[in-house]
Structures are given as structure tokens and as C-alpha cells.
Image (tube, rainbow, N blue to C red):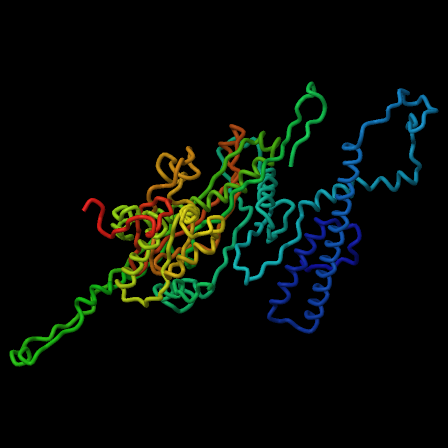
Length: 562
């Protein structure tokens, strides 16, 4: 059916305007893509474009008016329910004669009734507008994920860009409200509510750039891509307690996640890369020296044969979250469900982070343990100087291993708490302003050694250590850890691959409805971790934040007890 442009927009509310906008945009796209586009069709496109502009202007006007009404409703509510106590007069209503008393009855005039009648409609509009947030402008330069609404989500147009996780949680509630009730047979219905579109660098899409998988990984791992309130009780002690339904804002963030170069896996179940030739093996097998005597004796010149390269395949793994909720509890306290959904997504990111870091540190044949005697074996030197010295030794060995440039940058992954340990140690050191050891100073000590430090969560802390030992665990630590593990590797040694889409779904399961339960959130994301060409060092260093210096203690490079 051909789209008809209405003669007027009078009487249309936000929902009707939204539907009209969707229909107009669809008609515009269909007509624009018509291969037989002529002058008449072009004129029709201008009319539809003018209509879309008018509709969006009208939407903005209604939303602005609704926000003003909502603000006025808040002020009026505060006046009626939050005002001062009544007068001190003892007269009863209707006694008359006392100043400040209200008449027993007051009947508004017909004209006033006519003016007050639309108020509930406007108030409803205001509440609806409070949930309908303006679409944020998303640019490709931001390189951030976009959460878009799926089709047939109540009160949300298809393709709407959610501005917050709280808005996504509200959409889940609205979607589940439309699921059937009392189905006799076991039924499971899964309908998408939103989809997360991850930023895709078209230059890093496997199979779509003309590059082989290995060349694509090389581009992703290239170092050149790196960027240089008090509550007041009301009433007396005998008054009943009021229920405060608002939940505290979560303090958790996505800070402290591992930063890895990433590639997009648009199809297939994984990726294959060739095993790299180790430079030390090539060094020992390449070249020959022949003397005159060797030549006279006919000694054969040694030759290096290009070896057969094995291919290493890494398969995608799926990380997911499923949250169940009681239907009655959600109906009575929906804010709780929304809060759990929002915070669960943050916890999900940290659990993926913990899995990746643990694999980098402990995966068989994918990491190299680098044992150091510097530290505990040196008299008293378990301070920042020993830590930086140990990292320098490991970095120097790494650069020697591959004959790298002396100024080549290496990645250095350390737990977040090490930043504060260094500050605590340096605060005790002679000649240092113990009140002014900044993060920038500490980071500079790493970068001067051509190390790029990443201070991360989810490694060597109470969330991941056995028994919950460590910072953030079940028992608060009484002292700093005695050792720290550090990862050192060349940029691009570890590469993260992801599918470009993360599905967020609402799931109807009739078997759970029998117990008055439903699935509030179901999401899954496919990722993989590729170990590329180079080794990855794990350095263990003893710690003791004493702040000692060479000028105040006897210092010897000989091992203690020798």
C-alpha cells in the first residue's frame, strides 16, 4: 500500500507521531532505491522528507511541553504533600468567621472545569515523555558500542538507540508484560529486545579486506595503531517506618579492564594463524663459514631449509548471562530487577576480563615463566627499585631474545593494587616528598624503561584468588602481598577476537511460569584469545614496602647467606 501523507498532524500523540515517522522513513527508503526513479518520484521524496522534518519538530515540541508539565507536577506535588503544617486555629471546617479557613465547599466554575479537564492527559503525556529520551547522536569517531531496540518492543520504535542501561532494563519489563500467561504445554519463547552493535573497524574484518588471516592479525597488532545526603525521620518515635524503595547507585565501573588489540570474526567458529618461526632457532641454523682447507677438502656448505609451518587454530568461546526473577516481585518492585540487570552487565565484563588474563598467565605452552633471583636474595632490597630492576632485566632479556630495538615498547600488565604499593613504598623513601607521589610519576618510571603499564582488576585479588584472599575478598588484607606477578610481552602477542553483535533477549519459558518465575535477561557474546608469534613472560617479584635506599643500608649483589 502506498504511503499517504496526512493533511494535518493535529491530534496525534507521541506514539502516533513515532509510527508515522517510521512509516515515512520506510517509504522514503523504498522510493529512493527504486531503479525507475523519475522526476515525479523525486518530487514525492521531497514531500516525504518535508513531512519527516515536520514530524520530528512536532515530537520535539510535544516532548518539551511534556517536560515542562512534568516539572510543574513535581512542584505542585511538593506543595501539596511536602508543605508546612496546617494553621493553629481550633475551628472546624465550615464554622466560618476565622481568617485563613477554607470554605466547607467550593465549586469551580464551568470555565475552570473546562480548563482543568485536560490535566490528566497532559500528566500522562509527561510521564510518557520522561521515559522517551531523545536519541543520542552517535558518530563513528566515538568508536563506542551502540544498543539498539529490536522490532516489536512496546513503547520503543524499531532501531531506537538506548541512552542508558536503565532504559534497556525498562524495555525488558515492557516486553515480558506482553508474553502469554497460563499456557498448558511446555513452551519456550525467545524474542530479542535489543542488540549491541560493537564498533567495527572495516580494516580489521577477517575475509573482507583482501588480506590473509595472518596479515590481518599483523595489522591489528601493529604498534603504530597505539595512541601516544542525610535522611530526616518524620513524626515521633511511635510513627511507623516508611519504606524507601530507591536502591543505592552501584559504585562498580568498567575501569581496569585489559586493553588488547581486537579483530572482528564475522563468520566461522574461530581463526587460524601460522605458528611463528623462533628467531633463536633460525639464528642457530642459518649461515656457514668455510675455510680454504674446507674448500680444498670438498666440505659441503651447510644449508638452511625453510621449515614446514604448523597452523594454530583458536575457536570461539561463548560468555553469557541469564537472570531469573519472580513475576510477583518484579511487578511490585521493578526497580530491583532493572538494577540487577544493569549491574550484571558490568560484572559480566569483569568476569570475561578475569578469564582472559588468567589464560594469558597460565595457559600451557602459551606463557613463559621468568624466574628472577633479584629481590629476596639481595639484602633488604624488595622495594620499588627491586621491582623496576626486575622488570628491566626481563625486558632486556626479551629484547635480546628477538634482537629488538633497544627503544622498542613492551606491554606490561600488573594488578591495580601495585600502583598503591609503589606509592606506599616511595612515601617511606629518603629524599622523596611522601605526600606527593602521583600516578603520573609512577607511570613515568615504567615508560622510561620502554614499558607500557596496564593496571588492571580481576587478577591477583580477592575476586579470583583461591579462598577469596586478597584485596576485595572475604577478609580484608592486613598487609601488602609478599609477591606480585607481572606479564611482559611484545605488542600484538595477544589478540582478542569477537563477533560484531551481542544479543540481549527476553525469554518466555512456560515451565518457569508454573513457579511464577521468568527469565529477565539472557545475553551471550562470542570471544576468543589468539596467541600470536612471540613469547609472553610472567615475572614474579618479591615485595616489601620499606622504602630503604642504598645509602641507608648495606647493599650487596651477593646472595644473602653466601
